[in-house]
Amino acid sequence: MNKSKKWLVGSVAFALAFTLQAPFAHSATPTVTVVMPTQWKDAFAPEIAAFNKSNTTVNIEVNWGGAQDQLIAANKSPDIINTGDLFVAAQKNLLLDLTPYMAKDKTINSKDFYPALLNAVKFQGRQLALPYRFNVGLLYYNKTLFDSAGLAYPTAKWTQKNLITAGQKLTKSSGTTATQWGIGSTFGWWGEWLIHVRQSGGDWLQDGVVALDSPEAIKGLTFFRDKVSKYDMSPGPKADSLGGFSGGKTGMEYGGHTGNWPGYNAVSSLKWDISVLPRGSKSSKGAELALEAWGVSAKTANKQAAYEAVKFLTSVAFLTTQWTELRLPPTRISVANAALSVPVAKRPSPQNLEALFGGIATGMTLPRTIPFIKVTQEVVQPIIDKMLEGTLTPQEAGDQATAAANKALSILQP
Image (cartoon, rainbow, N blue to C red; front, side):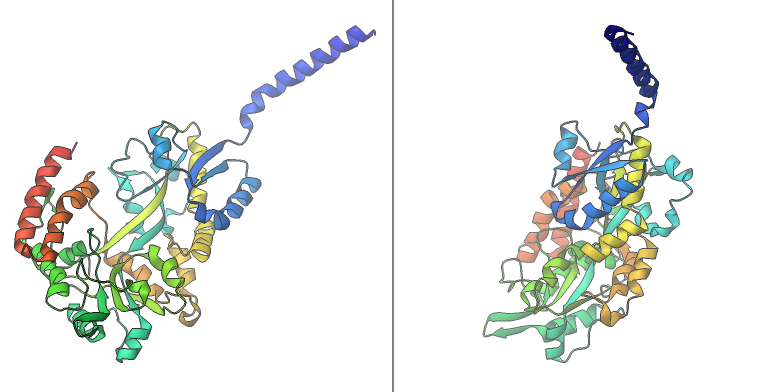
């Protein structure tokens, strides 16, 4: 056979081999994308790399430090979307319904998620995401200041009366200048005053309309104001906060967030712990319960693969790494139980993890009315601020906030 014939035969053989292999090109492991904060990279990158190496169903590609919202706006949505309880209603057309995928999946064990957290990312009967971390409003306290004042630490049996008594004993001043606050207050957003409203039997939204003018809501707003103006144990919106809770000169922080833990633990002199919030005038329920979750983009070309990736990112193994490395509160009961099994004395701050996971039962998610954040921050909050400044009574603030918020909702609601 001459060289030209050998070349022809070889070429045909190569072409035939390529043709026979071509139908199997689609069997390559599909890649799905997700955006994660850069500060998670050291903890998560090794876990994700090991997952990618060990399975053939999906390859997870992380955009570290990317801007998810910008990508979605540019029609370049990642395959996996970071969402949460407040956003699934607005994103109902953006997120894939995971219900049918979970129904045929024999390994998901959805009963291992705290039911309240799993339900919080359902919308109109559709499971639009799986939760991976949560926050619940808690009472944070400075052990050193409590010890110095000879006060017992807060317990689950505390009421508002206990809070006031401790707050006043922890407050110190030099002349007219405060040198130590009994309890810090959160100004400029709904994070604290809405808890008091709910614990008094009221709520932001009742029967589809804003109801901050109800007698129960007014009672809650009054207590929020009185912590500053009547009991004189908390800095007002214009007072020196003395560095806040992390500054070491504040006895308690009301409704504090788990996201503050790294900052608190970065202060070596701060000895702190948590407790569930004191019972309000009517109920113990009312602490803000919020969560983040992973969902699948409805536009992804690899729906099953993206689902498998979400399942991994919310698996027991991954949530364990999330908890041990980053202290992001896990949403699975088994991971929580493992954390609770560690003796209290061997736990890093906060040690009272019973309060953290127990707080899920008394926590309440925010209204999923799509314009909630916009209306609360831009319409309601300025009115609440005037109440704290003393230019409006709680009743006047509740009346004005209700009227203005309902008007705004009538315009903004789809």
